[in-house]
Length: 239
Image (cartoon, rainbow, N blue to C red; front, side, top):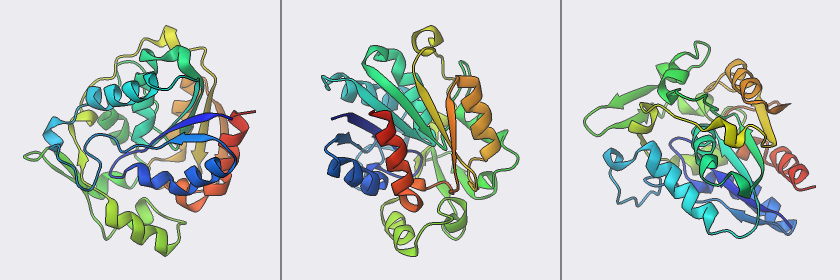
C-alpha cells in the first residue's frame, strides 16, 4: 500500500483528481488530493492573500502530518509548488511525479517561465486583474486550451468548479535548496498535445531537473482524458 499526495494546478481544485484518486483507492492505496488555499469554490481567502509560500506551507503541513513516505505528484503549477515544498520534507518523499508541470530552477518565476513559452496559447487566453490580483481565463477558449481531448461532460464539470487563479505566486522567485532533492527519484510526464504548457518546455524542464521522462498523447488535463494511463504511471511508482 502506497500513500499519494496529488497537488493540482492553476484555476482548479483537488476535484480534478477524482478519477485518478478513485482508481488508486480501488487498488488499496491512500490518496490525498486537497484544494490548495484559495481554490475552493466557497473560498474565504482573497487572491491578494495567496502567495507561493502559502501554497508551500499548506503542502508541507499536509505531508508532515503523514507518517509514511509519500509519492508526491504535481500538475501544472502544482509542479512548481511541490518542487519548492520538498525542501521541507525531502526525507519523506519516495518519488516525485510531474504531470505537464512547471519545474523551476532556483531563482525562476512561474510567470516568466510561462511567458517564455512562445508555443503556448495561454498568454492569448488570459487577463490579469491587478486590482484583485488574480488571473482570469476566457471561458470561450478553455475547452481547447486546457481540456482538449476531454469529454464534454468532464469539461462542463470543470467549469462549474474552476476559480480565478491568484496572481502573486506567478511573480515570486522560487529559491531552491537543490542539494536536498537532487537525488530524489523523479518522473516527468510530457503531454504531447498540450496547448497550455508546450511539450517542448515540459521536456526541457524535466531534463534540467533530472527526471526520467515518459510521454502520453494528452492535452493539459490528463487527469480527465487519460486517467487510466496516469493511474498506471502512478501505480508503477509504488512497485
